[in-house]
Length: 449
Image (cartoon, one colour):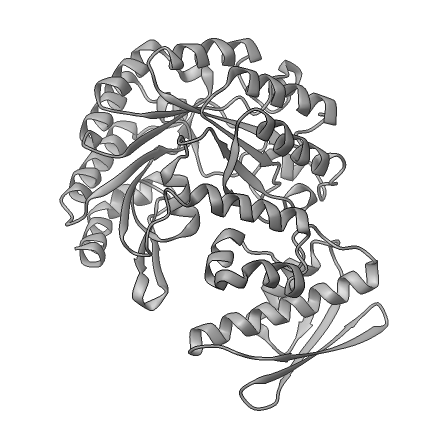
């Protein structure tokens, strides 16, 4: 339980404390001496601490960020003193540490190491990613991308917390496709030039061919990059690949998560590791760039099991490999049946992936973090030289406008000159989305038009 005089920051303080354990009681009080000095007093497990900070900022928005940062740092320092343990990401809890590095400018490494207590290994990882992003990074607010949400799957994986529906149980699929195409056509009329298109889910290729063809047709155009999350190999067919090729798709995600059949069955997948390899080779025969997702920390998998899957993926040599750390979120079956994740060998898995993939010709190119991740680690995307997914960089570094279509899509308008982002989300469930699609389009026309 968090006790603080800063009620608007209690959740942020909890994020720090929860990394050391659940149901921990911390008292934190902040006092301000003028505009530029803050003192923070903490009490935990019978011990008291005092921290003093000089506040330097440019404007009220930056002031809020600086105060929040030092409040979380105080909580982190208290926990490390009491537990005698440091975390790889130090006091950082945000989703986008790379974005924070950009904001800090040339001295970002000193800030990470000396202020936020990030480990040298993770600081070096960020440096590698910033270097990989140089050919792709755009000025804030100068880029527009189009995201399309198809939140349906053939079945639900045990680790999944996305609001996706089993497609066999959906009663209004034809209406959803009609509404989605209407929204796509409206988005293409906006005075924007889309650089990238990303079709995600769910599993977009779980749609019947007729519906999938209509959506791909509506999206066809001249883009730098056009990605479809094919995802599960049990849904990838020659007919779907013919459709994607016809309408200009350039990049396809084929996501095994693991190459162990026993784990695939355990997490609710309806395919084998051999199916992954077969469908990967089929996708490559069409000339698409391919991403493969793997998850470190899946249930009952040892360090050796993960290494086997990682080695298998590297041997297949796709253009991109993304290594996720298992995240137990509300709404997933694993969360319902599991307590807090034990880091176990997960840190070793992540380190092995980094070293193995670098030796195999891959570079880390984007990274993000989530709550409830095993070992409080990260998800990292790796790429062959010149093959980075531009959309992933755009959305993670938040310098691009994102026009999202479909249920549970989140649009973002970036106001670069103001260092501000406006977000608005479409309804998460299909029925509500269908009832409000015209209002959604009207809102986007006002913001982006």
